[in-house]
Length: 450
Image 1 (cartoon, rainbow, N blue to C red):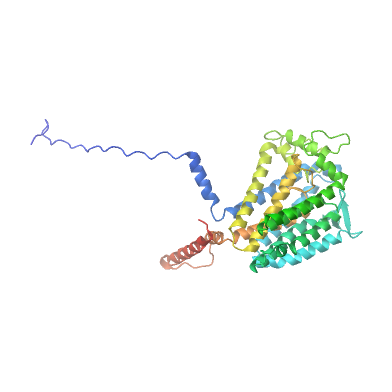
Image 2: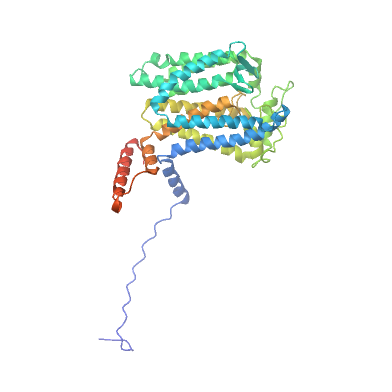
C-alpha cells in the first residue's frame, strides 16, 4: 500500500460535481405584477378599497373646502371657517349614516327602498310649493330648514332611484320577467321620468343627467337588448336637446367647451378661469392655501370647481391622486357587483357605482373644459351637505355588500378576536378554533375567491 512521504495515508478529496444550472432570474416587473394580481384577488380588497378610498376622498375634500372657501366666506362677512364647519358637521352625520348602512342587512336595505322613494318624491314636489321651495343660482331645488341650513331633495332622489330600482329589478328577475321588455321598462322608466320631471321643474339639468345615467346603468345591468337601450337613449337625447335649445344659459355652457377666451359678454368666465387655475399649478402646485383664482376670480371655487383649486394648490400630483382614488372606488364597486349572486346587490352596487363615477366624470370633465358645465358637485369632495349625506349612505351600501361576500365574511371572522372565552388546559381550545377557521375558509371557496 503506497503512502505519502510522511507515512500518513493519502487524503481522499471529494469528487467535484458540476454545478447545477441557476434558475433564470425572474423579471422584477413580472414579480411585481404577480404580487399585485394576488393582492387584487384577495377577499377583502374591495372592502378596503371602498372604505379607505371614500375616507381619503372625504378627508382631502374637507381640507380643500377649508382652503377654497375662506375668501368666499370673508367676502360674505362670515368667519373664514364658516363653510368648513358646516361641511365637517355634514361629514360627521354622513359618517354615522355610512356606519349604519354598512351594518344593515340586505333585507333592511330592500325594505327602506319604498319609504326613501316616497319621501324623496314628496320633498321634491314640496320644492315647487311657493313659500317653501327656494331658488339658488337660478335653480329652485332647495328647501330652507331654518337659519343657514338648506336641503336639496333631488340629491336624495338619486339614492331612492338606486334602491327602489334595484329592488324592483331583483324581484322581476326572481320571477323570470326581465326577458319581456315591458316588464323591464315598466314601472322603472316611468318612475325615473317622474323624478326627472320634478328635477327639471326647478331647472337643475345637471342632477337630471346623473339620474338619467343611473337609469341607463340599471337597464344595462338588467340585460336590456341593444335596440331597447338605444331607443331609451334616443328619447333621452331628444328631450335633452329640446331642454338645451330652450335655454340660452345652457347653450352658452355648450359653447364654452374647450374655450380659451372669456368671450365679449364673459359667458365663459368660469370655464376659462378654471383652466387658468389648473395651468398655474404645475406638477406640485403653489402650496395649500396659496391659490390665486379663489380670490374672487373663480366662481363656485369650493363647490363645482373645487377640483380646479386642488390643481392650483396641489398641482398635477394632487389631481392625479384624486383621480386614482375615484378610479379605485369605481373598480371596487364593479368588482362587488360582478362577484355577487344576489340580484339586488348586483343592481344596487352597479347603480351606486354608476352614480358616483358618472358624477365625478361630469364634474372633472367640466373643469378640464372637455364637457359643458353641468353644476354638479364632485362626490364626497365638494362642499354641500345635501350631496354628501346620500353619497356617504350609498358608500355604506357598497361596504355592506363587500362585507357580505362569503370569502370576505370568512376573512373578517378570522381577523376578529374572540373575547370572553376561557382557554382550556393544554390548549384544548386551539385546535377547535383552527378547525372552525378551516371550515369557514373551505366554505368561502365556492365564491371563486382564492
